[in-house]
Length: 145
Image 1 (cartoon, rainbow, N blue to C red):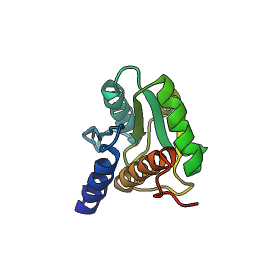
Image 2 (spheres, rainbow, N blue to C red):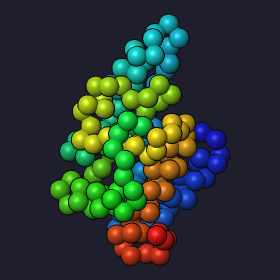
Image 3 (cartoon, rainbow, N blue to C red):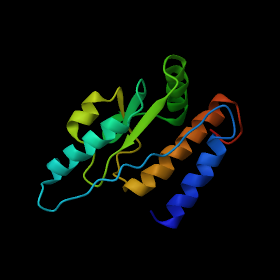
Image 4 (cartoon, rainbow, N blue to C red):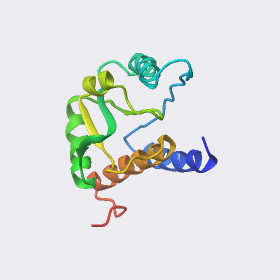
């Protein structure tokens, strides 16, 4: 990962993890094989991701075809979800996206934008949005509307 991604992720992780919430990034390494199709590579990646999802987690796949939410609705979704399921797992796909079977197994598919973003940037964006959601729920002035 480029240093700006690491710096951005570390900054938001530090902000998120200082209160009653905790967050971590778990990176799944997948060997891309040029002899396999993109779909086959995605399938192998999906299997590795599924094995890494903590049992009982509420799974949210980040996908441009997913549901669009604004920051307030996202905050309330996280608040409501954590009442029933204390652990939320966000899935960010690789360069080819998330395998359809994994998207189908997710409890929710959300879109960060109609634009497609690179994997590294999505890490920073989702962490910022989680921090923003926490600030909204705690009436912190970070979010201004």
